Picture 1 (tube, rainbow, N blue to C red):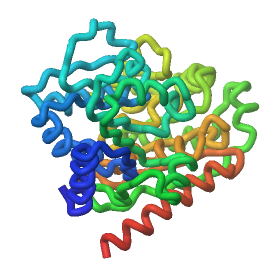
Picture 2: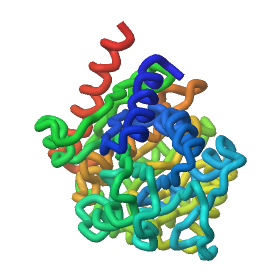
Picture 3: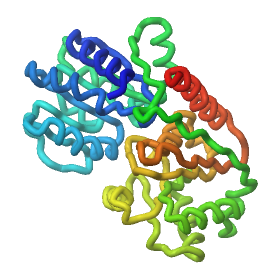
Picture 4: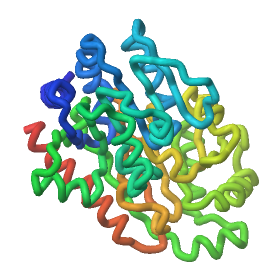
Length: 343
């Protein structure tokens, strides 16, 4: 671990030992999971029950094998709506935040990853579940790269303690967003046309065998875009994927195992999944479905690994919205902080 990661890891141990509530604010790809290991190990050694929860199924599915490998001798269970296995007692539970509703005063330590993510954020029922699932004296650790305004206010007013990590483990800066304008793209999509710039970019990446994610605003956009691309490119190169897609896990696995060159996806893959060496394109980035945190998370899919710490983040939009401006500024702000750490 880097010195910055070691400092955060030490903070986490202290939070778990003293049953505190704490936020770890770390940029995407900072190595949050690795920073948890020492704290979890200590808690398990002391006989504590630990739960790692996330609002997103994909995050849980990706996290489980990494945690299982690190804590091979610990009883462990993975719970989410798409995994119908019956519950059995485990010292370490990995689950979606909805699954917390099944527990009552069960956990000594609760870690919530992607705490600003839908459906957890602004959901009173799930916030109640957090309190209900933890013992009266327990530690709660929240993880995020994009804290909500409410969280930052609590930090400023000393109602919530926080640790900061503005730099990735490989010490390279976050790839910054390039914004290009595409006028009347939705009208043209109805006429079965895509912007030349988008087609050129996809062609370029296919020829270079460069893996990428193409984010679109709506589920209804997936098929028409895929159909247009099918007229020009080899359809074996990609899949479309969305939240209620029956083959979602399979398609994500195909991308991870490099059986597909790219996925056309909704915001469902904006966070918690790592596909090494990818670029991202956001088509229709001005759409209200793309919040600032969503756009920052999408940009954060790029440059996560040491063997390719850079990459392209391209936003295609009709206009420069407040969310786009804020995402650009937030990444620049974190890079400014990272440069100071790099000296």
